[in-house]
Image (cartoon, rainbow, N blue to C red; front, top):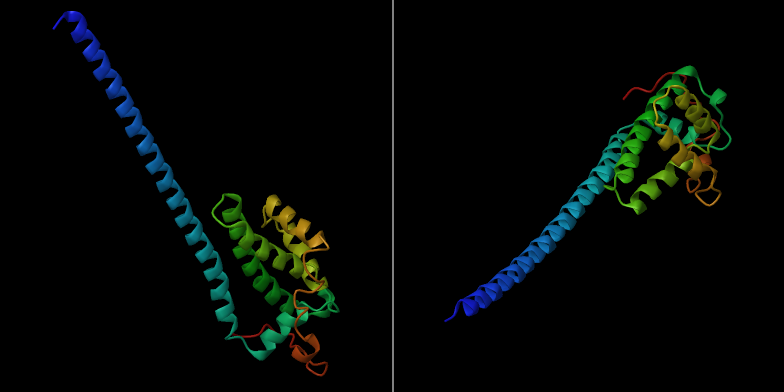
Length: 196
């Protein structure tokens, strides 16, 4: 075997080695990309679960409320009730109630912004909140809350854009409820903060 033949054989082996390493790298990249997709799906699933679970927990706690507390929540959603129709204690109680809900919602807004929460889930929650802040009492409460600088500007813009979109929800987020049945005219809502 001549030196030239040895040279050609080593060149062929080198080319085969390069091709084999490129194939190996390609397989590794594909596996890494699939692992990244799986991790992304897992993060989104966990975020969606947490978002839904936090609301479910809030609703479960609401099951323990008194009739008076439930009537107060429904009354504040009425298109006929304004901020001034409620006592200071009722206003404070409802401020804490809605603030807790909206803090959960703002967390979900950022989960959506950073790609951890699906668009459909976020838009459903956003549209619900837009319906809430359309009711006169809640609209006044929202304006007061904004003055407290609790909410980020991005969150405020997202909710208000949905609120102002006539396609989002009916005027009252309790539109499907018979508000007159839930709060009878002869039922006076106490001026004291309901006890849990």
